[in-house]
Length: 267
Image 1 (cartoon, rainbow, N blue to C red):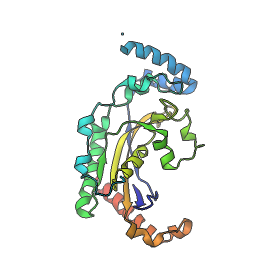
Image 2 (image 1 turned 30 degrees about the horizontal axis):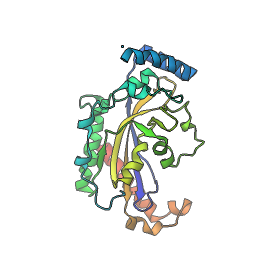
Image 3 (image 1 turned 90 degrees about the vertical axis):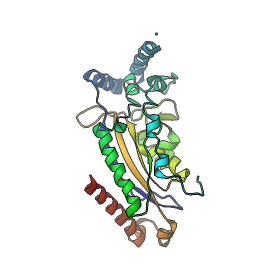
Image 4 (image 1 turned 135 degrees about the vertical axis):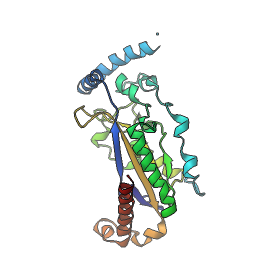
């Protein structure tokens, strides 16, 4: 959960829920490990064969309701097109055919899949908060997995020298377009559109070495909530320890704790 002042949109704390990875065959795991070790040349040879085979508000009014913002039913499978991630053949494109085949599967939207079941339970819990706390959470679970480096890194104040930006860690289509490495890549667009509380769920991609606890495709779900300016105005100008000791910080901490404890009870 990300809680922030409505005026400053300062990131206070975060909640992420990793809800599993995507299965792969033994051969595809070996292919991806080989790619991670040997870089783009392997990817280009694989891509060429694979492609040939395939071819033979900041708004002033309140945002729309949570239900009207949920568009997953209209987009299932929309992004399941491997060619979309393998072409054009940009020199910075390091996406392998195996990774391209995973994008857009949207297992988390399958009501009978374990990922879909836990996603639905989490969304149901946050929907119930509208009655108990007055906070209505918008649902975003059908976002385009291709984002810009501005969305994925710059808007989140991730330093330019952060290792997560490197091609060894991230799948790039071009120098500035990539597969999202976290669902946080969509935060800025939703905050700018006027959403003050929302959940974002999706598949994310990182060039991890495959082992018993790591796989380059997995899932995240996160929540964002903006606190009203009135509720945190007493902490204006505070930072560091002064902010941590402030009543406003304690209020946000309490709100976050109650929300997450309620989620655990619901699950």
